[in-house]
Length: 68
Image (cartoon, rainbow, N blue to C red):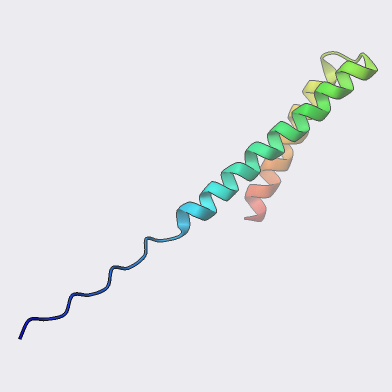
């Protein structure tokens, strides 16, 4: 009597969580840098808005990774 084939198991969902986390990190970076750019553009503080936005972005990403 032949044995019945085992059903295929679904691949792990870890790639979905990693994709979501990477998208979140990219969004954080782009958001803070966009705010820095807008501050530079409308307040005339070039290049300090982008520098502050970049530092805030890196700090937010580090905080998000630590919180993970």
